[in-house]
Length: 302
Length: 299
Image 1 (cartoon, chains in turn yellow, purple):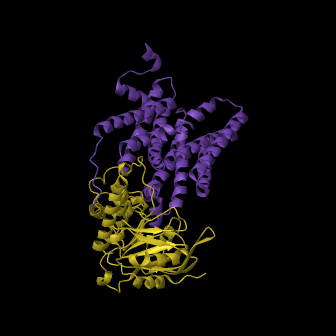
Image 2 (spheres, one colour):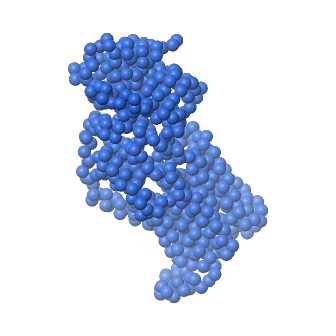
Image 3 (spheres, chains in turn blue, yellow):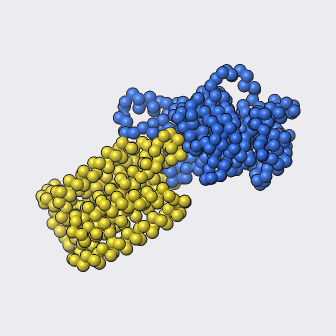
């Protein structure tokens, strides 16, 4: 049973609805010829003999802020790992920053799905951030070398950028989830990547922290010109910041602007089951009727 | 006078006591061996505590016991037994870690290896039937009769492992606290895990020769755990860990020389006392410092 191409699905539903106008301003000002940060063509991924994703095509442009949504176990983290070359494609093509997946990892900032550091973790945030810069280097640095001072300056800079200056020198295990997440984003940013892959950075954060971190990611995306792929469970905290969304479910994926993708029509086709999208009076979206039912978008707000 | 009974030959005059310590070649050898072992154990131990592999470390030290017993049985130098068994043990543990399904099954598998090792040690000791006096020193350590040659071997192995750890320090640190990100940054996480277990095996084999197989932890874990309690800075923590290991080793050897109690007892008690003191101090300080203003979350 072949599904329609994702691009077709998204544009097909794009016109029908006049809701629009609640995403960010359209990205038309951006240079259209900018090289693509991520491009998957008809990609399939198999894990343990099972096909997790089949015939997925998607793209993320340079400097774009894209969220990847979908129910648990749909293969969101799997896609991120495939972008890093940690999982091979069973079929199809993947180009990341213009290179085969796995090769440009030095130009990618990656924040895996966490796990918070437990309170016994006696590592300072600043050391964690610094590992992002020089953790893969062999040998010991001589203190006082110009490169060491330069690295220390860069670490201080990104810590300032994420607003973690007040607590970066404390053991990370003693910080709150939101504080840890900011430092982890700083770690992912420290090498000035062209692409940020953030796997569920908002998970297990309280609402205020979710909004804070989402705003931070938006700001980084704008100011530093980094393409961002943010994997999320719930679209509502990030809805106002996004350029586009990729919705992963049922082994496939659909991409497009949020108001095009998060519709009953598109999602029903993706899931192969009737799905309803409800819009609350404050603009929040609630997706109803997913096959793996118990999860509902926006359930944390209820 | 209880002191006279406890500390024979102690004049309570520091310089003459030190002179006395260094006047016997066997004592000089012991202090040199102790110094080498303490530096190595402090360094490796810091990484072991960081990686939460103390159970693996303990298992390696238990594996050292049948190694030493088998070597005595075969008429080989005890050190050969320590090194070969700890090396094999490290490979076994790496195999378990590589094939593990979950953390709990890993620790169960390591535990089973540990039990087998103790059983084998018991077998070799029974087969030996010689002067069983040796068993005590295999398990609990001795500083008597360390030869120049042994000191040379200890130094060579320690230099090798310190060099390896210095070269791999940053990637190993990265892989230890953040394996996923390290892997994505091109750090060979698996290779480092195997390499570290081998280094740990070598350290245990060296430390066993001073503290005995069962008391390895006094040098490998306690100083490192104390350092981790005191500071979250990696470089400072490693230096403190080495300093604590050196301190308790020197003091332990000196106390053992002047008294009737074994060196293993002194080293363990000293490092334990240090650990307890530091923990208590931290708890007291933590109580007075509670209430750090929570940093603002919203941007």
